[in-house]
Image 1 (cartoon, rainbow, N blue to C red):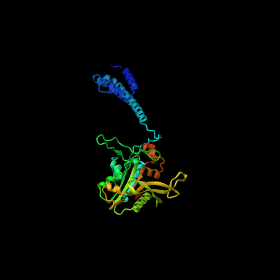
Image 2 (image 1 turned 30 degrees about the horizontal axis):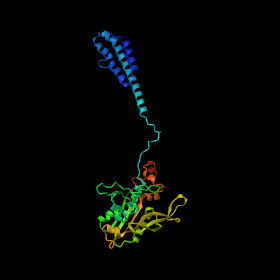
Image 3 (image 1 turned 90 degrees about the vertical axis):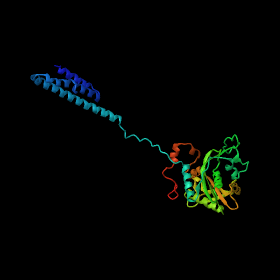
Image 4 (image 1 turned 180 degrees about the vertical axis):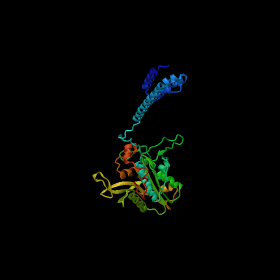
Length: 358
């Protein structure tokens, strides 16, 4: 007969040495499985005499019960330990601050451009677009620029390498006026458009960058005069800055593509480091404008004796600076997310003249 005391001691030691639920399961199979040591003893009782069964039965059954209880207790202990270790590993410290959410915003330039487009759309203007790379005709010649005008020189304009076959030099457009030319050459009057987009000039300081954004407007029809131009611009500026009225003046100026030409100023007060419109004794330049030059109309195939028109142009970035208090234009193009978080706008709040622009 197997030494039951030694067997029990070996099994109890194996149970105590188990360090995982898988290990204790192996001990259980070795002791109580179909071919386990204790199971073999129970099967061997059939070969014993009745007297031996009466003597050994309670002893073997007692061994089985003690081993079963020891395994169950050890398994419960190991399962509890594994659960504690798992909970500790998966613990979330609710006292820690949450991770910052990365969120984008609408750039002030794009916000202001959308505001301007919304206002002009309500006034009956359509949006027209054109290429950033232009030829000399659309950027200069059709707009009545003389051959020796400074804007045609390298120090003012970005020129591309000349075409090796024709020698023609393309330019990065210096204004969105070429869109006006293309529109007049492709459409018959009446015309009422605005031309938003990027433009490029060799200039860089606190209020100028080599790449900037413009919106230009064009109206061509019969019997158009300066009164229409002034009313259109005064209405737009008042609504853009959300004023009841605007105190503006139009100073005579010179542009090759308009005659007469003017610059529009708004009365303002700059005292105390704060800009206040419609007050004070100072004036703030806003935009350039004028009546479309007859030569421009002829270059585009429109009879200046039958049709007249006015045009205007303004810097989108500059208006964004004025409206939202941006002191320096250069950070607007530095891709600094901190700057955008401060000056940016929600992408879900599209400008609407009825409910508010900003």
